[in-house]
Length: 531
Image (cartoon, rainbow, N blue to C red; front, side):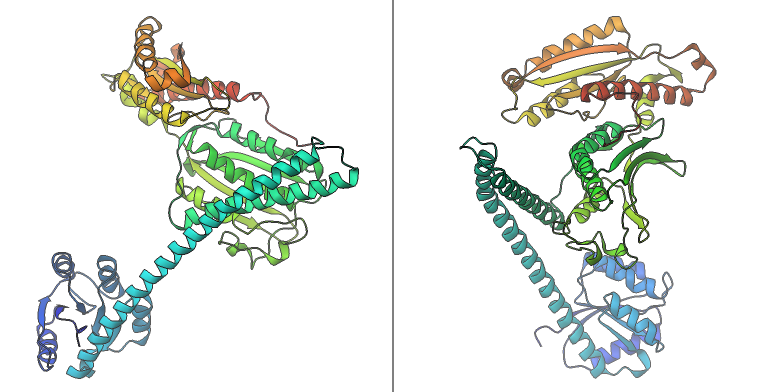
């Protein structure tokens, strides 16, 4: 009896039915504190101020009707048990309500004090049991995640040792090895690398399940990152005599994404495509934009392999799922790659999906948010409804002194970026997010509403203030340069909004050209063949 509800909230707009329920409650032997309101909005407000032990709910109220009524209550107070009091028997609605979290469904005409009392008691007990089960489930998940994390970390040390000594033997540094011994050592190294990949995926999946996956979005030139991913997969593709091609629309904008995480998704999808494509086959990676969805950039990976069965297609992004028809001697892993890829894409605010027909190949598609530079530039490069006379793109390069980088270089770069934001005028200059580059160097850009003569004053201020940082002095060097953002006289014939768009496109073009140069890619190349 200790679990019997003492605080009851009755939401009922019919005075007669409200009196009936009060009568049934007073006929019981347990003293209750009953609050009654006649509108759902009043009930929701009462729950927020004084959470009840149980809610007795009529579904048809002046401001809400049907299933929407109990859904709003469950959304507002998911931990409070709800018993529906209906004027008519509706088995379908009753089952729907129970499945969605309501504890019981009573018909007012058949209700006695005994059935109402028992229903409320059972509702409270079941809700308490559900809370207990949820706490237990969360504890089990946390224990499992800690166990997997601990085991994964512990396995890394012996695997690293095995890899190092097998590499010494394979390279002949510990003495001459026969061709047969080299073959055996190659099998060992391949197996160790496979185990390393499995451990990495286990750790990533554990972080994803516990909500601990993190991304650090930057301004990203997607074409350069795709080329990098293709270059990393190229040796596997060449070995299987598979062509990997890159196709891109003429104007692919910057996206706002984490380069390391996007590269992880790309490698996973391209590697899968190569694995399931037969010799002499083709994998096509395409970058595009869609007129119906201009805020996103789309990446599509298409192969002409065996395809995925209709039964397996809805399940391929589930944790630990592996299509039985796709597992063969060339397939290794835990079935976590696509699950991790989905979680990473979702963190960016994008989507990932697949389309396939057995025997006709598979197409994976995901999208990433476009970095909308024109919206951010408009208040900076315009004044009194006119485009400012001169605009400069200022570039700040941070280069570590040592290779490999020692110490917390990323933290040094973050500190420099924060100081750079304080060195500019908020109403006239815009600091772009950090750029993704292929290496430890970090590059920041500032769009400044000034000319080439006065920008030197700005550069001096930046170099003096950032260069004085103690952490930067001991770990890296700083370089600042500037270029004029040029636009033609034809700009005068455009609206102010169109002028801002042109400037944004010009700045994006200048930044992308820099990124291609920094990452060592040919800017004119549009197709990459793995063979």
